[in-house]
Image 1 (cartoon, rainbow, N blue to C red):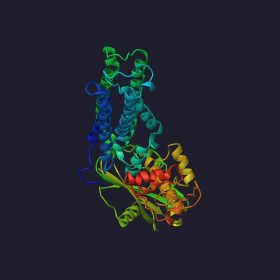
Image 2 (cartoon, helix red, strand yellow):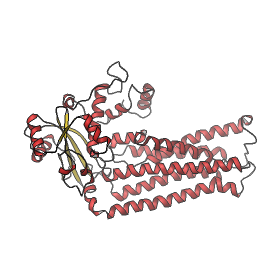
Image 3 (cartoon, rainbow, N blue to C red):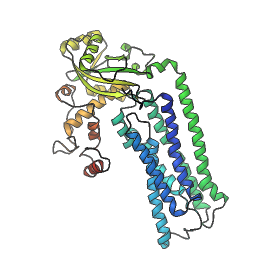
Image 4 (cartoon, one colour):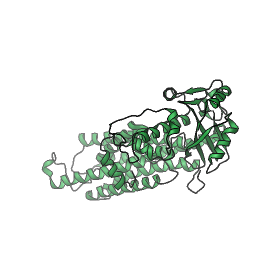
Length: 446
């Protein structure tokens, strides 16, 4: 758990959502309105500068230990950069190769109309991100480095929810701008001068949508903050400084889980109304936990005589105020029987059975995230080298996963590198090209 100034509170986190929305839509609006005060040749330049600035801010946020959600700036930065390149091509064709363009489409005496390019590109990029959801590259990288939304606590859930909502809102606003601007351009626009109607459809609507979006999102995030501030019943379990210690109990090829009837604090914590591990406890906030203390805490809570405890990984809340230590526990037949006796309705489940619970959303989110990480990293470790190349000369080779194999392999589950290898490896297309991009451009070591 972080005690440094990088941590932030609930108000700062929710306010950051509004600020990144204003930053993103403000850059798009400024680029759309730039022809009013800039000559056509400078419009692609200012658009490119705005895109690069957003990209740099996004990269700086990614390097933070506790990140805000910069999904919208990530999309708009790419929309602006791509739009600037396309605008440069259009201007080049207009000035140098007029015979390639239909009709009298170029008039150097009137402003360039970037909304015709920026809005469709923003819509396409936003729609793609909306379609991919959690598999979108930026979101997947966030999960690999920061943990899933349930592991990042209250603000992590809010960031995930509102990040997707902002993408949805940006997508539909861009679609509306594209339809209106292109519809007017094709049906009513005359390339002689800019009359009042032209100014309204190409610039006025852009500014109006920006103002309306700013007001709407401000009211939305004020309501979100006010609602959760009044939610006194659940606030204690979601906020504040604490450390949680969780244990995944494994015997042979099964993991031990209990139904929600045996879970404590069902009212205060909604996650306890689903199947979960019986070994989960909260203690005073600490930044490190020795294996000896982790084993002692487990022995105090569970009837285990000879558990083999192994650290798995640590996750932090989005605000840096709480953390979770995740441990693997391997038990023998005697301890397995003791657990079954204490929890009469406990279940020893295989991976297939646990996946069935996940599919129907019956497994606790944290437990689901832990099993996913365990499976994903172990399969990547058994299939690929640390650089993503195949261990065996068999394309799309998939080894068998068994819980009993977990103890055999010395895998660092706290290292997100294996999550990245699982996502990007030699079995995917253009692996060597992407590997070169990662090493030379992104400066990653794999």
